[in-house]
Length: 209
Image 1: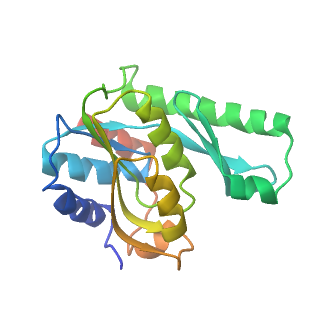
Image 2: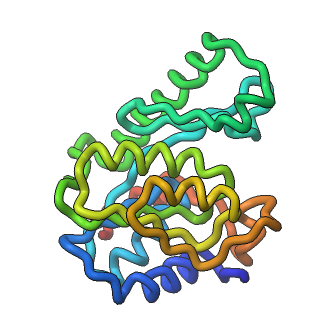
């Protein structure tokens, strides 16, 4: 299965979500690509839009490999499979975590302009990204959101690695995934147009919501 671009993926997800009973829905996208998809869903469902800020923690010496992720509230998730394969010192992880937390703070100011996060309690919250490879950033986001007492927490993604989808789905009340496969190398392989989304586009998308 392939998608033309993130807008196409968002439209297809919106169709799947249209029949779901939602209470005061809030659509949260993981920047940057997830915000494009979230905006499409929010428009289709007449829902509020915001970002959920979660960042990958790269493995020391192997930055392409996700050791885990950190959420906006500082909640850290470690991928046990990766942790078992690589050697790292705790102080190395602390340096990486602080670096990613600084990036989260930068994005918080840029994307929200100092405004508070959209309230979650008692609402139907849909969290999306352009795909799930390791799932670390999504797990960190879902775990953090759970502490804020949503009525229901829905994971909605166009594509995912099958083995990781099962793990990530544990943290959601409901999962909507258009396509999952073990023949998975990178999220971009499932898109005809997977251009990089810049900060300015995220800001414009959020302001236009």
